[in-house]
Image (cartoon, rainbow, N blue to C red):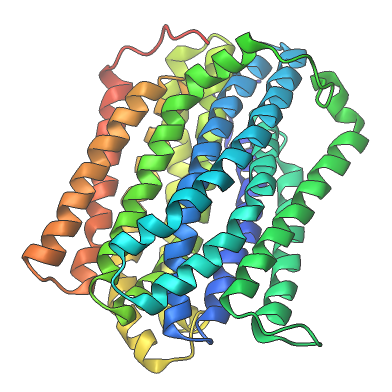
Length: 443
């Protein structure tokens, strides 16, 4: 593998991830779109319940990212059989982790949500959603393991197919379960949660079957189910633990943001959920390119080319910025069309427009920030990545709390917190890669 990837190489790694994220994100889009036609309470509750779920999920996602870094490093070193061992041990951990996270949800979620939420209706709907949604945790983590494997070996093509299948199943089940079509019960927000669980399970089954059938995976020795090796788990944990905490801190920061918005009323919360879903959709290519940075950096270091890391990030930056500018230009031409995907309520659309214009500008600095930050993670200096994330979230939440409770600012001004986070993350990550001592890290 070339240490400085060509634009074609960057695109070949990134575009299947983009397709997979588009399909995966359709779950959130369709849930929001359907629930936006059920009511403002359901729309707001799905945001709160969904973010609580993803705060737990991001712990597993962080372990998967650490496994991806290790698999990419071993792939760069051409230790292909070690890739399979890391993958299988990641599966072991995810089975145990899913049981633990499901138990934690049932033990603490209702008490936690009750303490922070002011609307009884949103609280009850959030609990209903969450207590069903949490059962998809095992399937979600299995899918994370496959994503880490395919991205780590830079063979990302199957990700798009699996995510597309998941999205199709979710759309069909959302339609019949939320509204009760074709003889199915009308489940409302509970139907959205159940549809997500089933669709994630279908995707897991797809990845397992195609990975077993595809002979190209034989050299990586996946599904050999080796004897439990403490050293492999320890090494993966060493890289992953700070990513797990970093992802949890990041998602918990956004969860706290929505709890703050909930204090301002049901309508601002509903508007924020619409904008959040659209914002996440417009960021899909950003996460794909940042994932590419992660694996390209780790592969390069594994091949002994630590001096090329900054050049790799800069090259990906150029490519991803062009795509970001195209996304922004297209979006500002059709804002009302995009918002109507989520709701047909003219009041919600009018209220969402000012917030939309705030966040669409935040995508530009986010593009560079996530690439530089993924460069830090790709070096396996995950402790420093955690410290950067904690600092950024503190600055972000200080702004949110100050603008909401001290200055009583409008919703668009509160959402400008995205600029605070993005610029802080970008500058902190760039300076660490430029001046930090990370070249000698061994994993």
